[in-house]
Amino acid sequence: MPQQFPYSAHRFGVYFLSPLFRFDAGFQSVNGLGFSYESETHAEGGISGYSHNLTNRGSYNNLTLSRGFTKDQGLYLWCEATHNTMQTMPANILVSLLDNQGLPIKNWLIFHAIPKSWSPGDLEASTSKIMVESVSFSYQSFILI
Image (cartoon, rainbow, N blue to C red; front, side, top):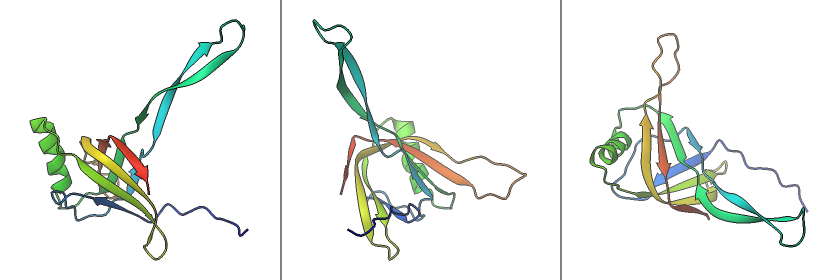
């Protein structure tokens, strides 16, 4: 069997699957895609020192997307509208890991993403770094395609 090498994480695409959301800048990073669950310990009846770990309800992490700050205000306006009106406009998001030719290797389809926070990044006179905006989303679930 040939040696299998891990995929590089530097080529990816983020696509909002809604005609309402069109953003003209690519994202610099995608963080927080994943899930976790709690477990409960129950003691075995009649046998001291033995217990069972049982899975509790799981939860999905917050998804954070970061990109260079540009003239495009679509992402900010969506977050602002959610914040100001307290009405959600959820979107499905597709995150694709790409190979060297730009073809998808793995895809994560994220359902019902709602913006939770937006940040324009820090302003510093002593640096020449690019200003980066970040948006965090809560979401219902995702599937690996």
